[in-house]
Image (cartoon, rainbow, N blue to C red; front, side, top):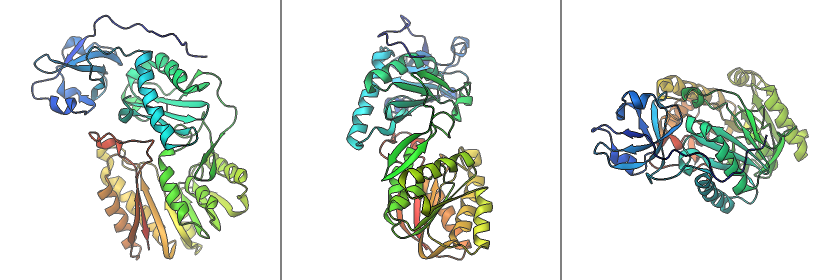
Length: 407
């Protein structure tokens, strides 16, 4: 089903008003902080009755308008700032302006249309993620307002980029916190009937845009893949939590002598093998399916040794309550992986946990390396690529950390 390309959508003549409490930090919102929490708003019966995703005008405690916000009474983040112009019309034209700005930035960064096009708050669309795969875009509408306005968002996306297919991925963890479903959909065009080839860092990846993890590939690791590739010529490489072969295929493209990808998903490893075949490096590539911790122990028992080991696990500490357990898990990964690294080899450890900042993650990794009886020097620290910009006011937007140690 193709989204209509009409130029206007029903907009209320006047928006309802939500108001900050006197002790709320209005200055932070004026200076760019995009969220207003439920305990910062006057939540009378009228405000609580607003449907999830409703648009409203935010006012400070003196009734001075501050902008247009999206409201969700079901969420702890009760209001998300969309536009600091309190009379802004959130319609297709508004979406087109935001998307065009993001597209212009990506075209300066990349020479091929494979990138994260919209990175939520940092690109002015709170809770919205859009990854581009040439003529296909995959939207993750992780906030109720974006779900409500999917029609103008889809139309604007096609208008600005010219993509023919738009898919909705509903697997985002925060959707349940927003009261949203987990049903994927085709919003425009036709879904690809096979995995899509994605070129990055000289490698070819296969992305399943309809049944894979997240949107099908992790663009955020692109610069960290590139660093790993730069130290891979002639190296024996182990890629743990490999997904579709992110680090291992980049290493093979850069001349690694051999690479082993380990992941719990057979489907992801099949895509990794297909990518290796498309590159013509399948003779230097192998995979193992199983629990990553078990596989690390098994490789140690086999006496395996590698010049470069990378571990890129899922978020062990996605939120503050999970931080202590998450840091222990990162320490365990580092301890089990460090013993597999050859003398003077490199261990790359990654975290995509919002709750674990760089210092905490690095310290946990160093403890694990020490408990493995190894000494380490940091040779590189990496973050998400430039198509995942960070909003300075929002620490959560700087979630990805990669630390490479020479052992």
